[in-house]
Amino acid sequence: WPFPLFCEAWLAVYGDTARAPARALLASARGLLETGCIGNLPEILDGDTPHEPRGCGAQAWNVSELLRVWLLSVQ
Image (tube, rainbow, N blue to C red; front, side):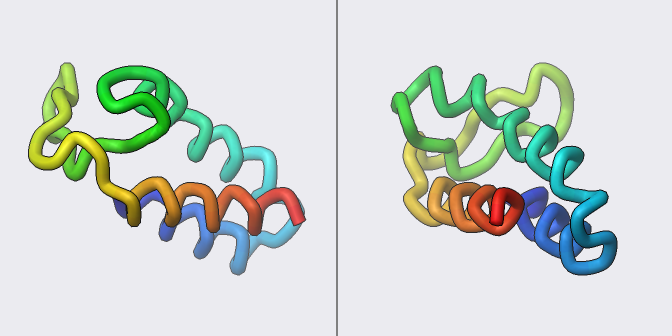
């Protein structure tokens, strides 16, 4: 799940102007949070469309990283 780290870097470099776009990118995971193991994110996704979930169906650190960076984006 590299995109929360990307969003954190985006916020560090661009500050307040990056908040809305970073939240939009983070919010793109909502569909995954609402399917499969509800409230969790899969370990990995296929890189090619349709980006099927693979590996463990519920990875705690994926969710915690998404939440951590989301909270940074709203502070």
